[in-house]
Length: 152
Image (cartoon, rainbow, N blue to C red):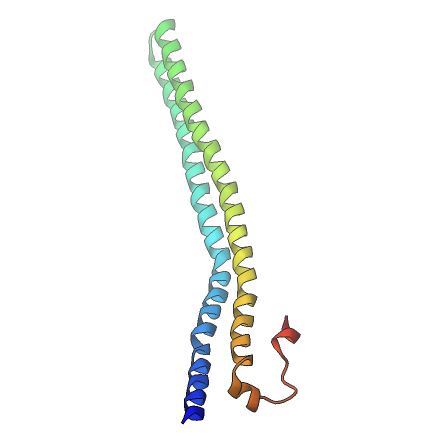
């Protein structure tokens, strides 16, 4: 009866290999999706930068048109140009922040990709070790079957 219970526990341990391998397979799929995620995030940031560049151009054009439409009034013209310069500076600062954000996105996703890439072999070898240490596997595995030490 004790032997039967032991074999039952070992079979149950082998049944746990599937969830382990599924998790490792999910990590492989996540790694495969990383280039698409990187491209999407960089495109979103680039679109924001393009919108800001367009706003800067529109602001400058608009303020210049207002100044040209006024009768000669240096005070009002100076105020409008100062206002325009301030708006352009604010938009430019936002554009610089977005450019930095794009760099940070690239670095962050590169780090995330590397971490995920390092995790996958560890997960797969962990699953293989679970099988390798199983009593039933040791009994029925062919003698020339490579060990996890041979793989890593």
